[in-house]
Image (cartoon, rainbow, N blue to C red; front, side, top):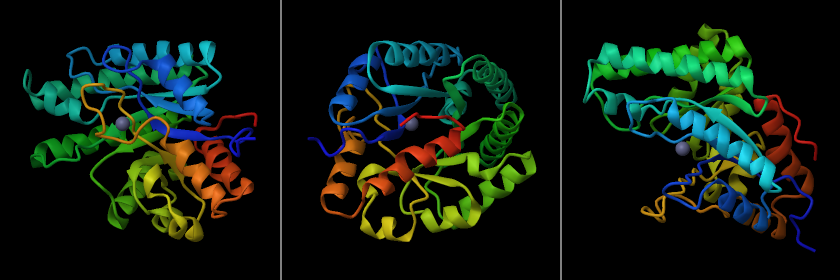
Length: 280
Ligand SMILES: [Zn+2]
């Protein structure tokens, strides 16, 4: 019997794209056949003047996965930080900011309306160098997202430059100022940040291939992700659909993880972050 058979296996950051990739259903089925059970799906940046279109698509995609596959899917909606740079080709920084704030208010409404939309994300600040003004506005937008998350009682996933202790401390302080519990703030695309996470309460979402024995020995307070983008024109730029189940299976086979530890990472941590019940 497959070692992953009845275990909860969660990818905490994955994208689906019916237009450029395999699409919601096929990605979910591939994930399930590899041993995956739960997908946390986020809308992609569309680089389109209409910032809410991709959120509406995400709602449909999550519904499709839950209806037509054995995977349990939950969604996060947000405005990717790179959208600000795109909008500024057409308008002033101030106008772009206002447009993003409007879209985030729409995201908040979606969280309120749908049980399966469990957070705001991915939001944050560009991972590439930008002007001081753009940096400042990006931080203002991130702070606003934290306030929205606090208001509706949901989680938030941050996309930002690669982080060390300094960023974790900064996000912790930002969350505190916004009145948001930092335990509900996820830093996506992390490496080994488990001890910093314990110290500053920010939840690290670690790229699956970077989860090794050294991290597991330090702490189980992390979740796993691929950041799979589902774009057939850009194969191999990120981890593949099956990576989270594949890595977890390997760690179980080697005895580095046991079943209780898998429940902690893939179920309890996820339930705590998003305030959901995965029923495993
Ligand atoms: Zn992403």
